[in-house]
Length: 219
Image 1 (cartoon, one colour):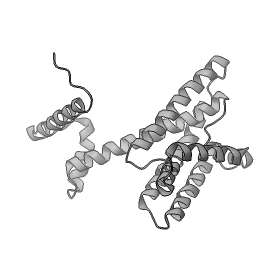
Image 2 (spheres, rainbow, N blue to C red):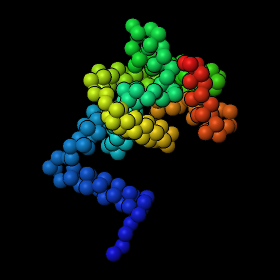
Image 3 (spheres, rainbow, N blue to C red):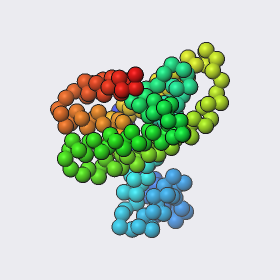
């Protein structure tokens, strides 16, 4: 039997699904639950089409899931007792030195400094960087949220090993996904990616150097 693979299968699914959404709407019997949000927005702001609102809505969902998952991985790794990611070591160190300010707050302060540094290097105002800072702001809030419940998890040795494995995979996958997508990403992931474009250096070199500098700064 014929088997469709990769991008072709994805394209067929997208075409068929969008066709069924519009057909259901044209039937007068309503619309699917997920599509009801972009449909409502398209009625409120008709300047943008249903397709555009659907894209924006799905993008917002992806970014939200990315922020929730990545912040979860950072806090879970910290709970495992095996350390913390190199980038998050800077706000963590400041939260230990100044405990009156939470780690989440120090996180978006640090990210704000990174965004400002990129604009200085670019020598111009870049609106996309501000969207990245907004994502980073909510990332800091989610770190404080995850700390509230992850701090109650037991810390037996087998569970700590499990926490480390889960958090390591979550963080690695989150960084890879952030670098591949074209949506606003967390400033700590944006910073090395933009430096590769500014200085025309390999991403691996910039990322490794940036991580080492963060570790040296907090040593």
